[in-house]
Length: 80
Image (cartoon, rainbow, N blue to C red; front, side):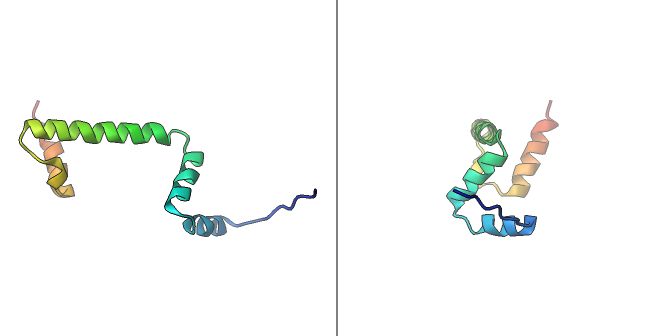
């Protein structure tokens, strides 16, 4: 059976990917970023650890906005 080769520009490929469902987009990312599962695990670990550290300080990490989170992290980094 003969095969056909389709020539697409990068913009066309990006447009096609944008049309995919979120699940399909995630599959594409996992193909092009092999370490993505490891990065996801690291981000999840970091998020959980921040919640634990904040709980020790009676702070609700999830209720903080991004500026408050950054200020808290900056304060923690300069405590020692």
